[in-house]
Image (cartoon, rainbow, N blue to C red; front, side):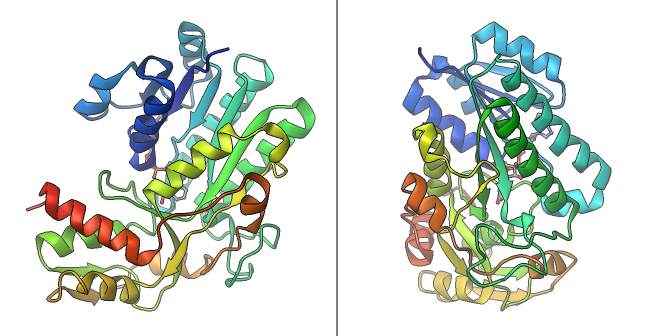
Length: 318
Ligand code: NAD
């Protein structure tokens, strides 16, 4: 049977690019974008779009029935930095939306679910270097608590009801076509825009804060690959560690200086420093590489070259 896909939270940093990719693969008519708000003109014009509050199970079901949806990608969430300011709202959005979608799969309205987890599941007591797939997980943020809990719900629905749910623990995702939505790794996106526009950037993390990161193209490919692989390859039903590169703000600034030699970075750490320090520095993603053949394409230098040349060529800023 043809796949019909519904994306919840399609207007976010990852959702916009995921929608484009899925439409390129499955056809515009087979990918329904949705969000609690309208998206940019390009998204609205390219295919069907519905306003859906991802915490409203009845509304999701209505759209699932309207379009004969078989797969749901749940990308709606409140991210780490914003969630610290609105803990209960974050918990409600992140949990209620997941349980609604898992229930729809349990009730056989849909066949397959994708849900986004995060490296924020790890905390200060997890090993920071080569953080294993399975280790101590004591997150210190409400965002991380919601993601650990969500992972256990995914595994529970798989074990108990056979729900085919697949998930990735994204590291910080870096993009230039879309802006980030309030995470702790947002500096690594903002820095490129400011570097090209102003030639300088004030970073909200310290110079030596090493964090795992990934270029958007790799994140989107991983998301599609984990959903397309045969169910027997998915051996982990909580969520998979995923990695590509790890760097500090200083290392990123030095890479940018290869293209913009006058670029200047200053540091003014805020509350996000504490969040960053609770997270891994380098993640071991060997399970994803073994189970469903995950391979990344972009390292720090390839990514920096791609972003700077794209921003300058398209005159996105300035
Ligand atoms: P984002 O904040 O950019 O986008 C989230 C989208 O959800 C927004 O378009 C927002 O309008 C929408 N939304 C908010 N409340 C909603 C509701 N009630 N119903 C429907 N839509 C609603 O987030 P993102 O960066 O695209 O992240 C997508 C997923 O990936 C999230 O689960 C996030 O936790 C996870 N993740 C992202 C990163 C990253 O670096 N971007 C890293 C790790 C994990």
